[in-house]
Length: 100
Image (cartoon, rainbow, N blue to C red; front, top):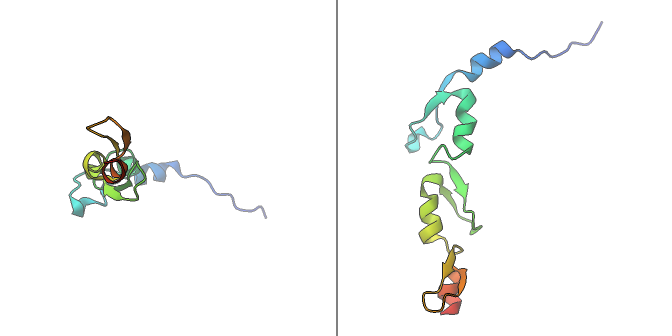
């Protein structure tokens, strides 16, 4: 007896990938609907605005993608900041707490 070999079933893979689904963040407000095969792209490449992402300035905060720009420009203590008096550049936290 020969061992059984797994065979890729492309037909069923295509059928499953084409199933219509809603974003798992629908309850939070995301209205995306599409094919299951596109869901990962929606969630991972700036599609879903309701996914939590890490702050790119490494402050430790996780914010919804829809709030990321506001966090980066107004709330993050580690955002780049320039002293209005002498143009010293550092993080917002360092300029406002240590520099002034």
